[in-house]
Image (cartoon, rainbow, N blue to C red; front, side):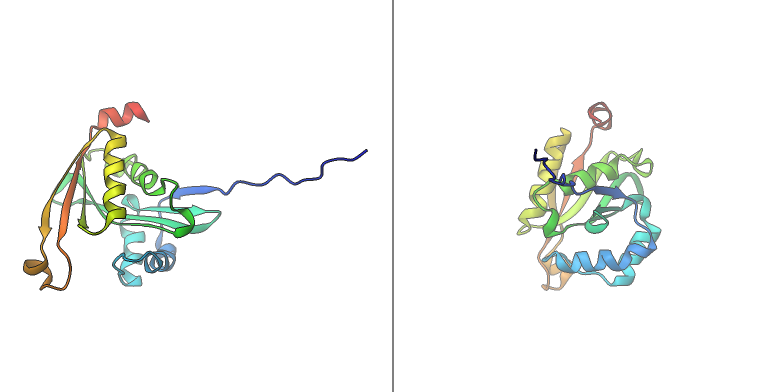
Length: 178
């Protein structure tokens, strides 16, 4: 009599969590690997992970950092959270991780009063446009955009114009859907 000795395949475990200061170097490495994202200094990523941990999201797949959202609630407008950067490792792309991290961010106590999500995107960044358009659609939210930081006025001709994208959220609908 033969028995099946096949070992069950363990599905990878995805975890979304608040970062801490010890995550700064791993975040920096992830962002560096996610071209064409602008690289910040490792110190900047360390400060984001430490000082802004309540509004940043770290995604780990079996303990490996595969996703990052850096964001903060605007000091002059507590109803708006600004998403500075979204990074998803090649290992985790195509699984909706960016949208899951944004949803996780908005579900946090630090975003209880938030009614708008903003970010800036250059016209040629199709991945970011797709992420935020899908997210707005999934949340039943409106998405508007306008030129904000312009090539000549703000970047001395060295960087493409950044368009301010504003997603107006219906927090009541989001709570019902959750």
